[in-house]
Length: 280
Image 1 (tube, rainbow, N blue to C red):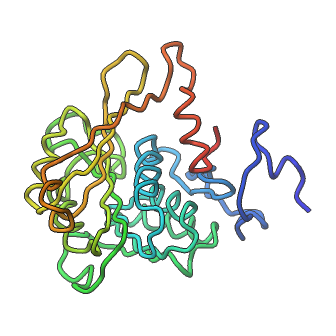
Image 2 (image 1 turned 90 degrees about the vertical axis):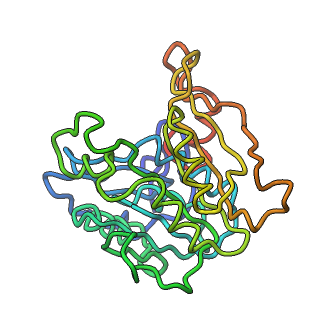
Image 3 (image 1 turned 90 degrees about the horizontal axis):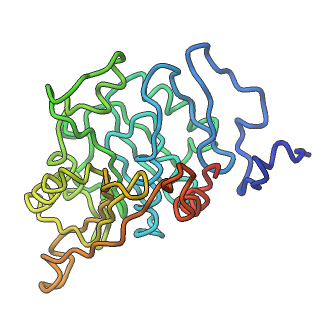
């Protein structure tokens, strides 16, 4: 029987089943870490490579909040699997297809999927999601998730690790590619949820319009109380799935604040973290 040290974290009771990886001593390479992500789920990451972020937590939360009962989920540019695995924790009955082109990231994601007991419902494809045939024309999904890179090549300092660079810079497509692939594989009434910098919101709007999609709701995210929003969360559907009066209408939600002015975690974001069973 597990003790309280296994089921609690700083007074918070971890919900959910204990995955198979937690029942044995995991093998963690010297250049990797194994970190908590949702409930008892954990994720393998490189110590010096790309690591999951608030963007990933929010994308998974937002998508699963506005598409709460999907049976098939697609995660585009899935990286080490952080968005998909949080969503998989929230959606225990759903089957997932995730697509990532970086071999190191896929290797880590497959280790994490095995640790979390997801292998039977979580398919990880090693490829560029823009490549013809990666997704069959008949494959449709009730929820599509994306946390795309958003810095154009040459638009900033690229960093010191190739895995980090590809997750930040548009080396293999941009928001338009995410929108077009999502549009081609959304089931009727399905949702495409993504995150993007608030200052570049027009790029999301243009990408959605070009793919005949409508942003039905969006939520700006403020990282520190009193500062302008840095990113936005977007819930997008096929325009043809909406009545005409809604095809050019977006509901803007009140901003979500991550930290209070004094640096403490904002109460609403603490509640968001609890909703995805991420350590508060």
